[in-house]
Image (cartoon, rainbow over all chains, first blue to last red; front, side, top):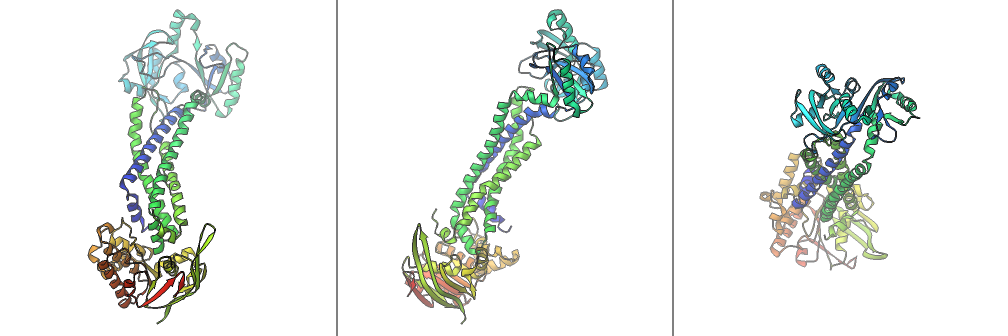
Length: 386
Length: 223
């Protein structure tokens, strides 16, 4: 530990080189952090999913609807506690950039199946009472400065026309991973208009969601539900909400995989940047290390000197990078289309992975210089001309 | 006077690819305590190699080297490093100070391997720098010192642990005449006043005159 002063002094012997290396590491850590945050945000839907909820959809594709009549049959399946259903409404709020999920849901049951969307009893009662009522997430309310009692008009696409709603409540997310950007309106309100304007689309349900008694029986219950409709024109596919979300993400798997790979390629780049600096530094100090050996410094001391320098530079770059990751991720999030990622923030796992990467990089970058320094004979080191 | 260095039939050769290059051949040498020995010889005669062997920074191909009754040719790397730190003070031709450390910190380096407290280390360093006449330059970095001053700091670093033997490889080789004389006088003083056993490699007859004894090497053999 007495030689720690030399570690610090050696680290900044070439100020420009050390600074560039530190900045290189910092930039790479930021890139790593941003990519990991995007990947984490993508998987956020899976994290927020529950194992005690099943999702039943049309077996061919999510885009094909199911009949409303399925609800009562599903409710009869042993193990099913509650059934609700929803349709993707889509539409535009003022501008296409203003994206947030809009779902037409069964007003009576939806919030019972999704207790993580917390609303007051009054808000729930008000929502149920008015057919054109809607509930919005607290993030969306904050973002567009919307309040209870205010009107909100959507320009429909899947359900064409102008749609006016009154905000009857603002739900709060129960967990950090809960999406607080959604908007829920009455399925029956939409369906009523469909009956008049597009009768063929009346009574269509996008998907059913079942809450079940025991998540361990999810497989058997899923099979039982699908068996009910296996020979019908609208056969179903039932899976846990987690599997459903994973399946949803799988459609973007190539992009996510690329981002995952890229984030680890960045770790490799940081390693090369630091290893290059360490190799150059230790090569320049070949004679000095030989002198230290002559003075009696052991392999342990030299290892400490080189490893300490490598870890110190990696640490400085890592800290700087992590420190800057937060505002950059925040800025990046602000430039994404609103509501694109309901939760977009640096997660603890990203910080842990970054810190771990820095430690591994600090250790790995020092390996070759240490190995070479210890192997070099004193007499060869003293004769070395850089 | 007691014999501090005893070299028995030492040979040293290097390998370059598959060719063996003999450097020292059957060297026998004895150095008494308090001696100031100048090893002279032309370039390539093996004088630096012999000095390195005595200082324990190289190993002989054959033969034994006893320093203060320890056969250093049989010591492992780790034991040898420990032995060097307490028995040998090394002065290099090109000073070899650490540029990012002050004169004080350079001299303190060997003491970092000891169990001395910070205050004790300070006292030792100040004493060593006083002996070489640089007490007022202890906060200077090597680049702020002249060549002669740098070499004096290097000598202070070599003597700060109060080693048994001081080995110097061409200590005046990179200095002008005045600075060289200062260094030689300092070494004479260390030998006479502080009773240090000194082995100095030089090819400069003027430098060798400072020593009490001269030995000549030619083609790896003491003549």
